[in-house]
Length: 190
Length: 230
Image (cartoon, rainbow over all chains, first blue to last red; front, side, top):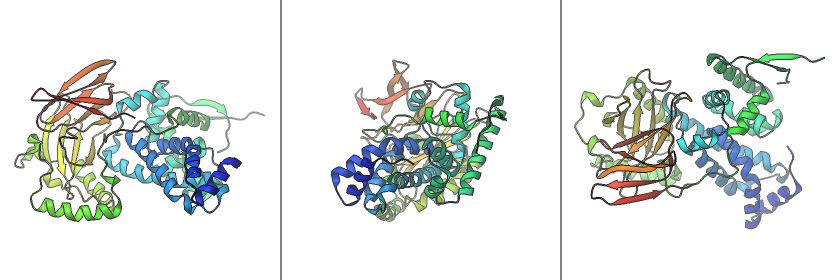
């Protein structure tokens, strides 16, 4: 994961208690944290928006515990993912029998360029377990390596690989069940 | 040599789909609480509140106050569907860990039914909170129901707003509780101001709606605009 010198400096100063640096660090981290949390919890819901804000608060409160400023992004993603998984589990129970608690207005926003296929992927993705979702989001959206993803999730690289494989297998099955044809594509490393 | 792999979903497509749904760079915010969020409470405060509210409930505190449709002796019509009872039991273990008490299934009261067949029940919690459960009619979608919990209604927060879309093949539905005296709710839908009536303390609208703000219509003719914002 690439970390710019600026953000490392902000992290170092923020962890030492400098308020202005903490604010600057949060501004830098906000897009990555917000979008990651939103995807893990389930975009289109107020729960995801609230969780994203809570994750930023968690980072703000915990910045003093940051040991290695060079690893600030991974640390922030770990804090944010823990929050997202916790909220996801709660939301899963709240939305009994997996009826997603989506807000129509948020759904409208995110669905502007929505195709039937992408909508089907989204619905199936939101039905995955929080751990599977987090693995896919960290690898494919946040761009973490398998090793970094394992560190963020506190699991082995093997678990990351099997989680991503399982997530993709379940999504593929959901697409097949909805009648979407397989596509031919260059072979990918998984 | 190019090797080809046939798979219903490539990693690239999944990554692009996630990007498409990742949304804006900043979280949307609300000026007022839209959904009930009791879990906002700090652990220590929640533990204390649980003790106090539990005692209050035992002493007769009524979380259904202001919801006449729920204020009736229990009948067979109040019985929750089996799946809901089972899931409440599962939910309670988590909810209790959060320090917000647990749902009291025996307190469930049927309040309203939409023409579509969707049924609504209120359920009290041991911490003096209130939950709204909605149950889809059999075979209407791939969902069976939903549940949301939080504070009881008040004049400053006389309605709740929830939204669900069980699958992309059906339109979203917005609904919520409204306390006694609220006759209708207005909001923008498809660029047009839309007003839906309150029946048996429940309002509902099927279709895309913009609920950044909502106007509450009271029986005395007054209105109250609630801004939720972003």
